[in-house]
Length: 224
Image 1 (cartoon, rainbow, N blue to C red):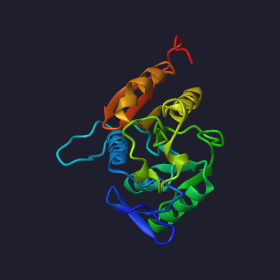
Image 2: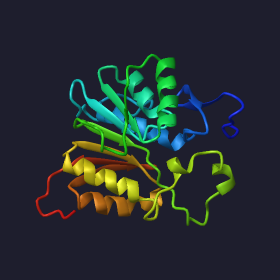
Image 3: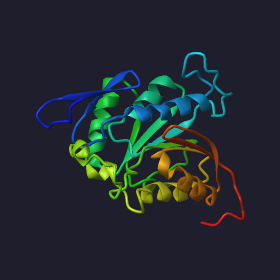
């Protein structure tokens, strides 16, 4: 797909559906589809032919929050695939939420949208948080900056070697004792995230490509 342009309507495929993309949101990428696989696995639903999912570990009507929803592709996809779930989506960007709402309307998904920096304005405790937050480190030598130039820096880059927002979300989630947390990050960042999560009461279940899957497990000796 060519870079999103303000002069035409651009759509990008994600998990078999086309999503509206504008310069206000990140372009959906194939690696993020593994996040959907991880959630389906938690729900005890098949996600690949011939792969047996785990048993369902989510409540009958799980509250799922997509933090930093951008185009809404994750939230919409989960709402379509898990009709018993109550899906919420948050973003700090009002223009991004406008795009996400349009995509939700296109697919008739009843998603509740929240303008919020991470969990600051979220008034409930989700059963599961999913998040593809900005995690790109501006100092990575392999960055193709030209290919990223059409996407908002707000959705791409983060301080602390790309981990500032992910760490903030882990701390906020731990404070609220959110049972499950699924994050996307570059594999080169995974061990640092795992160590930080473990120090904030989250135990790693699995890694799946770019995806990390955590369960809250209270450890009174963990230090924030």
